[in-house]
Image (cartoon, rainbow, N blue to C red):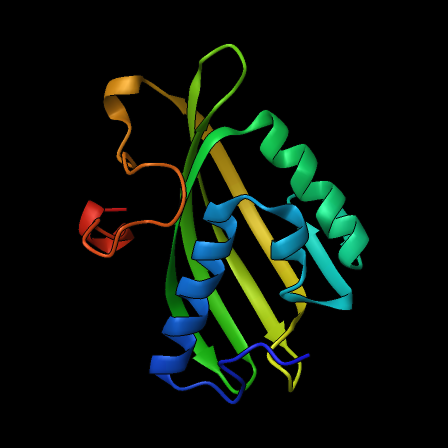
Amino acid sequence: MSRPPLPPFTEQTATEKVRLAEDGWNGRDPAKVALAYTPDCHWRNRAEFLQGRAAIEAFLRRKWARELDYRLIKELWTFAGNRIAVRFAYEFHDDSGTWFRAYGNENWEFDGDGLMRRRLASINEHPIGDADRKFHWPLGRRPDDHPGLSALGF
């Protein structure tokens, strides 16, 4: 299975890869998102270590069951060869209605078919008031005219 764009990345193809990842995560379909990773992909997400698509899919099911109305923006930080670094922010609320914003960085490594074989994520979050939210598009893909992280001052 091939998942373009493929490495080695250019600025254009790395930016496209980042947006495709953002779109997938904003779709919140764990089975579909897991297909972007190699069958034996290695993940570090905060203090959790995962390996393989089944573990990734289970993780995403748990994540989106508790992170409600999840909206994410990713931005290319840098790239070289088969690696991409991104920064991101996302907003969600818990089942009590408390809103949070999370910030982080990810380092990605891809195989020759464009599947991610390694994802290392560092993330922190804090509660925010409803008036402090910045991500207001309808659930799903972020509209093309919605500001990105840099435009929002993040």
